Amino acid sequence: MRGMESRDAPARPTVLASAPEELTRQRLRRLGEGIGKVVYASEHWVVRRERSPSEIAALIIIWRLLRKLAHVLPGGERLLQRPSRRIRLLRLIVQALVLVLPRGLWYTTHIGAMWRLYRERGERGERLARSRLQGTGLLPEEITFPPTRVQVGGWLGWLTVSQAVERVEATLHARLAELAAAGRFDDLERWLNRLLEFRQSGWRRGLFSLDAHLKNFGVCGDRIVLIDTGGLTDRWSEIESRLEWEEDVAEPHVRLGLGPLLASRPDIAERFDARWRAAVSRDGVRRHWPE
Ligand SMILES: Nc1ncnc2c1ncn2[C@@H]1O[C@H](COP(=O)(O)OP(=O)(O)O)[C@@H](O)[C@H]1O
Ligand SMILES: [Mg+2]
Image (cartoon, rainbow, N blue to C red; front, side, top):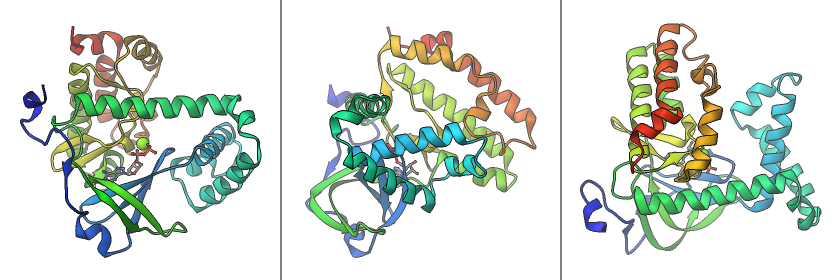
């Protein structure tokens, strides 16, 4: 079975006898973060630190609070869009609270349920990506090596890692923002179309992402790759209820955070919304779904 997949990229992570030198030569820069991971980078590779359960719980609490307060709190919207130093501080405070509560307590709350859902989706997505996407060119390259201590920026200081992932040129979100700022709207629209094609090639493999926002995709040359496999699913019931919700979104480009980028180009926004609505729907996905 593996043999069939070995066309363009290695089917398994490449195993190295030692970590690439650039990972140990210098302190790695903090490149990005999500709810579950913090990502540090050298020139060509990134390594990931998985956040602890209390850290994730704290972020979920803050996220929910900010979302509720976004319209009354000045700057609330902006805080949501870019995790800042202030969020980090807030996170440490909330995390301290989470840590003094008995685990059994927050575990039974809504936050606990969200945390479990997040963790399950992460694990399942990784498993599905390993079995169905490796060797397809849809994922960034991955390498493994013996456990190696690397220096990282921030209070942590260092980290022991045994795998690294190809560093993408930019997240799709960052690339689209750059292109809009440079007024390169034809290129921007091309990337939007590539995103839809990319998602469809996943559906043809029987995979759907429940977490398909623009910071979870990366750009390599003229390709899109999936940098965050969390949220991948092959369960039609789950996909269907998600799509039911998607079908009610009036302006997909606004939900994806493209409102400000496309403010001067309502024509592109309109074309994209129409394409998105036709593709990201129960009929649209079923058309590509394998038997
Ligand atoms: N291979 C990569 N190359 C460059 N940046 C990356 C890479 N992987 C992750 N990142 C950055 O780190 C962020 C968080 O990574 P992600 O895997 O999405 O974590 P989470 O599961 O917490 O959402 C991404 O949005 C992106 O900015
Ligand atoms: Mg992510």
